[in-house]
Image (tube, rainbow, N blue to C red):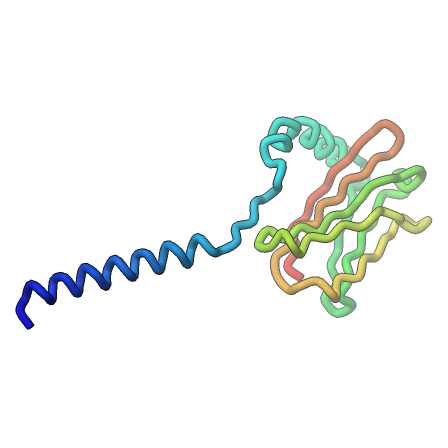
Length: 145
């Protein structure tokens, strides 16, 4: 076999490898942070106001993860639990299919316990959004479950 055929074989193998790699990566699923990313970006000032309200509370929301009990405990300020409405979202940046949401229903002591034993291990963002009267609040904490 002369050197001309060797060059043709090398170029052919390179083309096949390049096309195979391109087809493989085209088949990979890519999760966006959010489907309505641009709409959320435009409304972010409202989110900033909610975070400012939450930081201004005399006693801030406390989020605690117990690895032994496999639960997340939310501790709301006692003056916040009357007429409290909202949600807590467990957001997994690596896989949008794992995201879950719960309604807020704290006890009279301001505690809400959420079992997380069925969630996959790894990095999560816990996003708590609530409303008391006309005031809206938002608090986020990163957890490694």
